[in-house]
Image 1 (tube, rainbow, N blue to C red):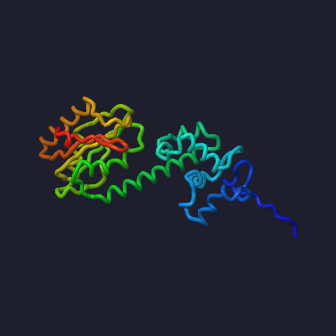
Image 2 (cartoon, rainbow, N blue to C red; image 1 turned 180 degrees about the vertical axis):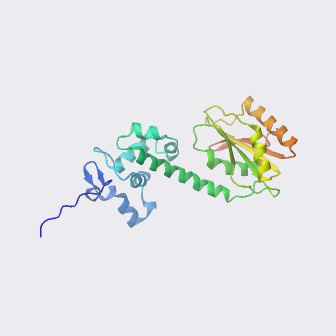
Image 3 (cartoon, helix red, strand yellow; image 1 turned 135 degrees about the horizontal axis):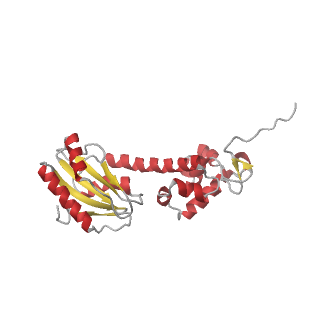
Length: 243
């Protein structure tokens, strides 16, 4: 019988070696099947997503370098753009970079599902825990309106009003009120994030809060609170006695 040469599948080369030729600790798919996903490092899990590295690095080594550049933080990784990944890392084309960003988004949505299980909002802390999964990893500002039924249960997901730059966003108060009428909810809350990490409200935040209160009062809606969200803390206009 003549010898049969088996070519490696696409995506199974790294540093000139096929996956089967790599040391066992660099074969993440096999390790996951044998030991479970919890046994793998973040770099190994990411390596499974991208499938292959480049001519100098295996997929695991490439992901180790990427995470090292992020200070070992998945949160920092999730803030990278498609261009950041494809421009700075040899072997990361658009398809692989998209796989990484998709995984980060799935993680964020999983956190959002956990927040949605807390269906009732009875305090500013509850409001903060609803909003944190939505905005915690963003490097730009986003603003949301939150709509509550008469029993303070969430009437659907928070409604994205606007997104913008690092220092602010434009908010159309009419959209906030309009959505409350569409959802037929008596109570409205508002939230936005500060990518800087500071919870101190700006004069523009104060002005927006006043406009929101006035608009809700005009339409016979209860304005519950306006919170500023950062990763680990928040500012509540209600708790400060300004609502």
